[in-house]
Image 1 (cartoon, rainbow, N blue to C red):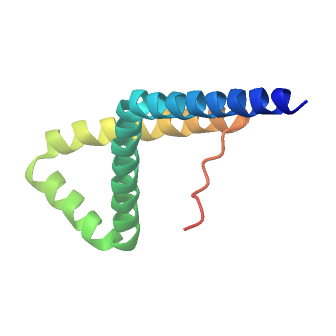
Image 2 (cartoon, helix red, strand yellow):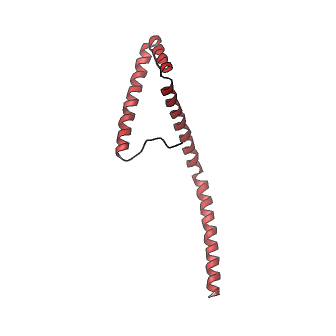
Image 3 (spheres, rainbow, N blue to C red):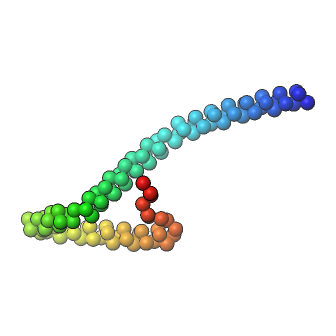
Length: 109
């Protein structure tokens, strides 16, 4: 009986060593993915800060758009169309993803 307990203890120790080695290998293999996700998180945070700035300073944004439209009307029209199309596509895509169960609410900070 004691021999079985010793064998089980040795087997358990080997399994724990194997698990530790697998965890270390997984950590090493997933490092590039973690770096990519970190970069994406920083980009999303920067975009949210930009949107927050636009919401807090609508007068300044409006003046900038008006100045652009006055100085370069063709360029303003082109960018206006691009922004409208991007906004429209974002709203459609967001609605479809929300219908599929994805939640776009901000995480509680």
